[in-house]
Each structure stands twice: as structure tokens, then as C-alpha cells.
Length: 73
Length: 169
Image 1 (cartoon, rainbow over the protein chains, first blue to last red):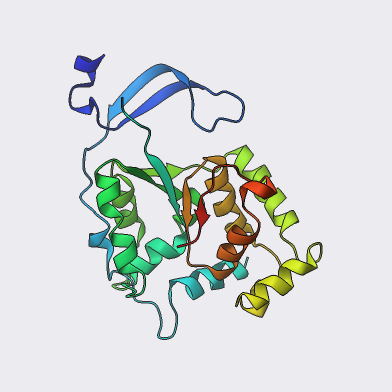
Image 2: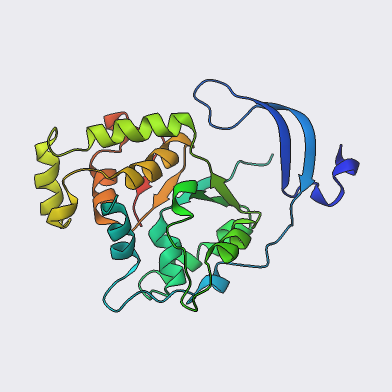
């Protein structure tokens, strides 16, 4: 299994298949694997890369912006 | 023996605060990066929050950048399952000042704006339900009403959650 995963070993993979859950547990405890896709170890975009990409209108911050969206629901 | 990392869930205002370069939030939020990169914690992003920012300041769509960020190995996109939906509905029913008038008084005293304390809105409840369902160690939010509800009601004593340490920033 480890050699099959190659670079994905101890990294992140996306697994497709039938998942089994125990009651009240959000994460599956077993899976019948149909396909494994190795995900990149590091994304091109970090949290720091996101800084400053948005400019909310004067007087509005993230809390009031999200509030305006949610209150409009 | 390896230990399971904590799950830290972020409300939308966290990522939006970073995108908007808000000085009161950046140091605390960016300082978490090291914990995530070292595998001490997983950053949980509720799926409901992903689309709350759609356009960047240069006019381009926000989603490609957000999608690339979500590919970081320390980020877990938390899906809205049926259980999350049921729990969200229960939270909305519970935290409604028509059924819980003392909540309104307490929230106003705690400084929550008047117009926000009527009830827990759907998206807020979805975020809270997601954190509860996935047994997050912490939900980080800057929203005053969610912080109030977390400190006042989402405690081991109220039975909503037995593993929550703290809701808020």
C-alpha cells in the first residue's frame, strides 16, 4: 500500500469508495477503496498569500460584511 | 504514538478578515499557520463559508484563490451533511429570542447589536452545527452573537457539546 501511494504516503490523498461510519462519529472508520488520488503536499496559496486581496467598502469590516450577507437571508 | 491533531474551525469572518487585511485579526489568525503546518491542528472550513466572498478587489473571482488555499494539506473542507442540517435547524429553533427572551437581554448586555439578537441566523447556525458535528476543538469567530452564544450556552453543562473548550477568538 505504501509503495502504491508513493509521494502520497504520510501526505494527503483523496479516496473514492464506499465509506462506513459509526453512529455519532463524523469521520468514517473504514472504506472500500475504488480510487486514490495523491493530493499536493503544499498548495501554491498560503494564508499569507490571501492578505489584502479584498477591499471591503470604507467603514465595513469582515464581521459587518458577513453579517450583512447572513441577515439578508 | 501519533496523536490526532485538533480540529480548529474558522467562521467566514476569519478568512474574510485575512483577505481584507484587517489589522485587528491578522496577527492572531496568521500565527495559527505554524500550528497547522506542523500538524498540531487541522483548519476546518465549513462549506457554507466558501462562497461568502465571491469577488476580489481587482474584480476577479475569489474562488480560484480560495480553492487553491483549500488544497493545503492542513485544510479540511467540512461538508454539510444531513446531520449538520438537522443540528443547524435545532440550533435555530433553540436560539430564538421568541422562545428564549433571556437570551436577548443577556446578549444586549454583552454588547451584541440589538438587531442581531432576535435569532440565530441560518448561516451562523450552519457554521456552529458544522463545528459541533465534526467535534471541533475550537470555533474561531469574531461575530459577537456567536461568541455570546458560545460562552453562555455551548458548554459541557448545557449538553450541547462535551468537548468544546472555547468558542470565540
